[in-house]
Image 1: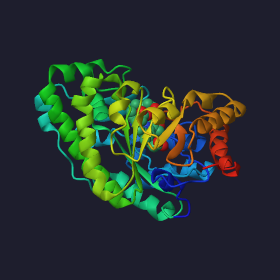
Image 2: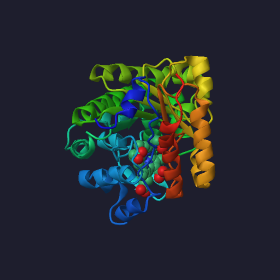
Image 3: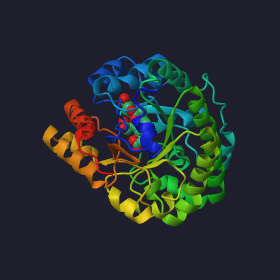
Length: 347
Ligand code: CP3
């Protein structure tokens, strides 16, 4: 692999500068993405391997990021399990959401092949086009975060309906989480078999749970998934949002890196939970709405705030790139990370 900085950082090898890629690096802030989206719906785009590859490569071609993440969405497995998924102007919508045990029984655990998941074909094509240049990141949602959408039906700031379901039907909730975990295991395994070098698991909604509920309903399934994926020998990055209170548990998971949001102080996480913890993040995406000078300064400060950024640190945002982000600010952030190669290294 020509540029293996990301793999090295995930393996805790010393790197001359932090690798950088951005969550939602492909998307609406890019005019070339908008152009494709004006002709095809979001779901059709995710399910069309050639177009998905084109869109995955757009940020790489522009910024030379140190990784390419395959273009898809965490909600596709929910659709393949039997839910009617739509993307509206207000975000995702599931029309036949899960509201009782019999809904859960009806869900299938789909075989992960190129017919069910065109994303696997996209990874295969990406591997041919780019897989010797930079690593390909495959991904899924975490079981709990998928549970949220499957029982709430659409995006929400608190997922009260999902939590009501959890508290009222703990046993059925375990059944649902179990089914989701099995489906995700098959899907992630096949992403690796198709060419993904790294996996990222998005647990965007972990933070809405109490520590007690996290330990009961989220952690066991994550542990299960991570340990079942271990034999594939592919580094796993776990993204969690707003989960300060869960860090004592999250930091014990056997993942290569934790991708954290901007509310966490990265060095403090290392000081408190282990100096060698792999970390990814965590610039506030709204900083990319400002100007190049501010972006450069904040990016530099963030990298320098991690005392030993030379090992186990990946530069990224604390959440996805926002649609109104000026392209030149993304450039400024990526270039700032690149310029660390010119800084004197003290290790
Ligand atoms: O570049 C990449 O990071 C790869 C593609 C990617 C998308 N979604 C594309 C997308 C990834 C990794 C995701 C993950 C995802 N999807 C998450 C976890 C990370 C996070 O952002 O919290 C979640 C919760 C979803 C579910 C989802 N998909 C929502 C809530 C929405 C609507 C809100 C929004 O940002 O539009 C989506 C739509 C979506 N997923 C878009 C993109 C580019 C916008 C769709 C469009 O083009 O209109």
